Length: 127
Length: 375
Image 1 (cartoon, chains in turn green, yellow):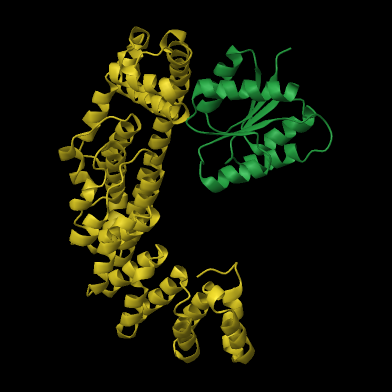
Image 2 (cartoon, one colour):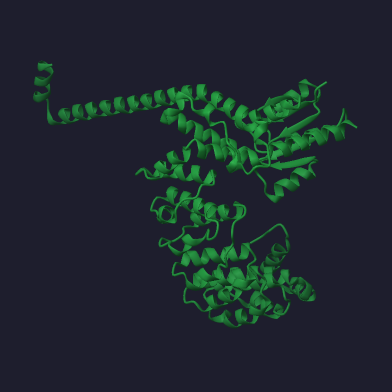
């Protein structure tokens, strides 16, 4: 069964790139454009995702709120979270890791690097 | 119509003026509405055309560039032959479509880097889209120039100094900022050369923008800012360089900053003191103390702050003196803050001051001791 990835990104081009790159490796990508939709999707699917990739700055709820909600959830399987953002300043990166982010990638990303990080985290959490 | 004209001629002057005014107002309103409608219609048409073209561009870029395994080799990006024939569609002979392609390439470059990012640049060059950007650089319209500068700097294309340097001094704020941004990003050896030609003062907002550009541009060659601190006749450049000296912790520029303490301009002198304080240059503490009494208020405040930042603990008696006997509130406030910063050398003194101070002085001390309050 292919792994399900929730992509939370309000940019127009980035999801297209990620979908193509990750789909090539048979990952199933579901894309939402803001934090509110992400919460809705997570509730509807009972957090049935193998990985979440999120931007930080988005309308309604930002990436940190999504990260915090996913990581403070007591029941269910743990879900790895990768932050992919333009905001690469030190405080933001540290804040992300403090809240439990598993990885942080600064835009622009190297497609191959993204793919390896996704694979590594999914394998790590599958054990 | 004839009857109306007859009526108009026969009407009183007030009525005539009112009728003319109404006529002009109605005409202007109709023209305004028509221009808004025309603009919206054009934008709607443009959006519609782009909505059809962008998926085509996305598919071409994905299939032939980003997911093309043949391009993912170790050969340098500029030596790779791209399948440019697939991009030579009739639609790309039109100017708007070429612009849409440039815009899309930039959006992709903002999201991917590495060899794929280089291939996107390569495509921009091989499709001769750089010529479109260079043509826009020659336009008389400033917004076209700004657009061209953004495109060329995003694609990392070099621009001749004779073209870009005059623009860094343009009277148009947007163009000036775009040119400086592009110059810092594209000039490999001397990204700050335009400091030599800036004649207008760098406004505070310009400084904020420039600082953001400089501190966020990667792989930038940082010069010794002492050269402008010593020789620039533009005071705002000197002041800005002092801030950059602090940001880059450029200790080699300290002698030039110290020399600036003798300048007649007290604003620059205050900036120099601020810089030395932030760099924590202990050697200048005595000189600052020596000049304190002859300085205007802004410089005196900066000296007090510098003593706090240097934190040598040697001048707690001076700070105590200022805190207790100065008449100016700001002087007392900064003396207190600096005393607290020198706490390791003035522990007993601070307690003594708290015990014996007036209500107002006690309040200042308590305020200064709050780590959340910064000034």
